[in-house]
Image 1 (spheres, rainbow, N blue to C red):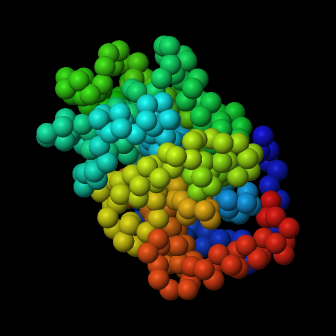
Image 2 (image 1 turned 90 degrees about the vertical axis):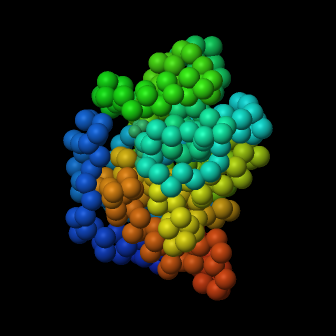
Length: 338
Ligand code: DON
């Protein structure tokens, strides 16, 4: 178990760099918090945290990193992984595609020919994915989802009932997508059960530090680097990171791939995770969103991290290897950073 309150922050150049990054973007006031789910509108827009967890399990947190919030769309990454484990890639591909949409996350669209939702990172695709999670009835399926989150995070997780019921009673657009997919045989009855499970997976409470550990687990071949537990079969990681890379930031995915260049996923509560394979997981939390539904500060922090540390997957300069050398040398010099 990870003790939520027990992180000792080791002084290091890397921690100082993150502290500076946090100070630099703290005063930004652009963006609007999500309000289409009424409960989300109550959040304090000033909350702001950054956390990096390396594949060695070292933790570099800044700001309100233990503050809990609902995971929202970031859940889509992990539930997609569970569906891949449950059914295998070939079957999942018959139900959900892997093409970016270029449209908003809540668009009511399916692929004209196949009738599949475009990808598992937009709402329609995520509802289809969730409907495939195995279990005898609603309770077992929810418990399997919660157990999955626990493996990634390393501690117990809970659904925020207010957010769940708030979305359940207002989520008519998602309900419409569910019925459209039911019409084309892409999901099966009972449709309200699949929608409830989708609303519940979105309403699971996480902190910025939890998200960074989850992202680091994806970076670490599916093994939680803090608890050393295998959270997901390593054979699924390539598929998960591929759809994150091409579709994780919605209709900003192309620009994100161009500028930041690492697999990522955002959620309307203001979280973003990004994965540097075999190196580290990154998480940022700041509720005000831009017009595409991505955290304003989160995008800026990730852009600067990528540029400064040379994290882009196609970076050809030696910047990237210098950063990795110094990060891991520093870890050795200071013991481990937690
Ligand atoms: O389905 C919804 O609308 C929300 N539960 C999740 C949306 C979300 O986080 C999209 N992210 N940018």
